[in-house]
Image (cartoon, rainbow, N blue to C red; front, side):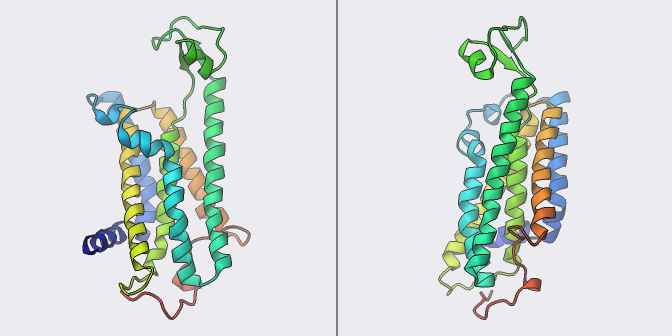
Length: 262
């Protein structure tokens, strides 16, 4: 338990800061641009992480929103109920996960449509001889061809949106004080550690995507969609009365008497 608490303390001191939320979007943009420059002008040699079948990519990144959803759901429920004591507020705030799911589904669908309508099927990756008999990416691949379209980076979009959403929700930890004797202490500490580790994995894989995959323009559009999704919700819509709302803050709450004591 002591090691878990130390990890939670480290995560709270590194991720749960106003300055982190302020500069993290620009940091992700810098990672994307710098990584793309490395890929373009000084490519790194192939490695385990450059293989799309690596464990982190297959079991984490490809289902990034699923991992984010599963961990944020109990975290939002516990912290928001602790700070407000109102089930209605908790249910309202949990709607942010439904909003995120819609954003994920609609955006990835748009990406797929763009790649479909801008693409053609070629005999090989050398882009020689268009095979006009194949009209979709699925048909092309089944026929042994190579589909080339404008493939906006879904990884850049999703990892950007997931990282920024997690950090926004973890901001409540500035007001939640964890007492070892409280019955929620272990569960909340575990969730903090899990979400922190997940955030670091997402940032690392975002950087790997920038260094190893996609063209610059594809990553720019992917990252831009992630930033728009985040800012459109947490920066604009969630500040309105008719919305899931932002994470509760002590400045707008009367904290319960049994708040955790550090």
